[in-house]
Image (tube, rainbow, N blue to C red; front, side):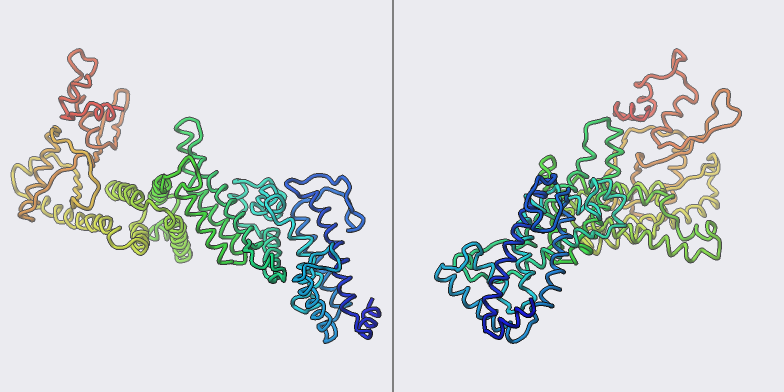
Amino acid sequence: VRNCVRSCIDLAGLSFLLEEVIIAAAVRFDREGAWWGNLINIEDVNSTGGNAGSSGITGTRRTAPEFLLHVENRLKQSSNLTSYYLPSNAATVSALRQLASGVAKASKSKSTTNPAVSPSLVWAATSNYNTRRIFPSIIETQLLAPHLSTSGILHPHHLYPMLDDENGSGTGGLAELRTQSGQKTFDNAKRLYTLCWRLTASSPSSPDPNNSTQSHKTALDHLRIAFGEYGRLRGTEIIKRGSVSGSKAINKEMEKKIIPDLLAFKFHLQSLHTLAFRSDEAFGAMLRSILEDVLNGASSKEFDGDGGRRIAELLAKHVDARFKDAKAQITASQLPAATGASGSAAAAAAVIDSNEAFQNEVMSLFRHVHSKDVFEAFFKRDLAKRLLTGRSVSSDVERSFLSKLKAECGTGYTSKMEGMFKDMELSRDIMSSYSAYSSGATNASIDSIKPMDVDVQVLTTGYWPVYPKYPNIILTPEILAQKSKFENYYNNKYQGRRITWQYSLGNCVVKAMFPRQSTHKELIVNLCQSLVLLCFRYDDGQDGMGLTIDEVMKKTGIDDRDETERVLQ
């Protein structure tokens, strides 16, 4: 073959040889592509024949990843072939220019020496005047390009397994997204992107006037669109999981998994973007579009127009569960006792990193949610409950998350929540001063009060959520005495201020003795529940069989019957 090339160069006929080589290669790879098309068109099927002998491939079962690997191997072979037989020198460059010029003229006159091969194919193989691109361009055009369609490689049957797992032959689905996302290399998805990139980058403008003016999508465009459809489908499957038919308890447990699964899904998409798609900005824009549509209900008819309200609520609940879960995080002050002095510094750093990573993950979803006002309402309500009941694991973590919300949404978004923390600090100062006041009080009426531990939190009305009021509630003498004692102290210290008691936020520890129990029990209940319990301290009703709901309402001053029934439950 090399001697033939030298002879053609000496006889100034190399362009004719190159044209015949291009035509022969085009026919060969066209047949090879047709053989593969029978196997991977829409779904994998067993070969029923085909021109297998011409391509050197046996008629066994084939998959899309095998086809991509075959194309990649063909491209490597073609590069080695051309570098050995067709060296790039002045003679070959001149022959390629002559052939390309002839193709352009033939295309304008709509005539060609070989009607079996289009002028655009020959133009693609010769346009850059480099022999190394002759066979690769033919392979890309004849073998690869016809199958990069929604009925071929980009069909969900072929594409989604490659995007789900690393070998493209698994069952795919949500389970693999959750368990394997940290271990994936996406070899097949990476190979697909590389081939699409080659096809896009090597597509020259056609000399055919009928084709040069047409605007068409590139191979990367088709892959990007298919990636968007894949992401929206997988994301919608996660969102719909919490709304399946079943008991409320089952649905509630399923809903708890939605946010963790969405976080794993986002990490999966980011891994695809980074590893498989080489951080391509166009695919990055598609990734952001996927998250926007999935989180705001635009990808699902069932949640169309939701605007992200459901996800915002679930995200706030997810944060609340983490911030009040002592098992999920250990504060730095607890670490020395838990880990020993030698390892406390490293453990503290690990906890800080864990909390920081959690907050960053939540914020990465929060940025794409449109209903940020819904998140604010639920988060503010849960934050107030954590602060008032003392269930927040770490105030430092709470403040760190608020700073991230402030940086994302502005000062107005977090001003009331920051005011809550100021109120809690002020309340601690007030109670410290009140304790000193109580210990030094000489008033006879105050001294006669039965000793009782009291903790009062003074809240600014505008900072906290609106809570139900009980204007006619009847407090016990012990509670009334403590209330009067604190009011005297507060009015003397802060003249001109008026305090209003929020009984719905009160909590009590009630000591109780039950029959057949040798020791007393401590019941942690809210204020309304404690008043109901105290109704039975000296009164079991007229018939000795207990009190009716109406009698409980009369004794406690709770006017709402539904609320009374809820307290009794």
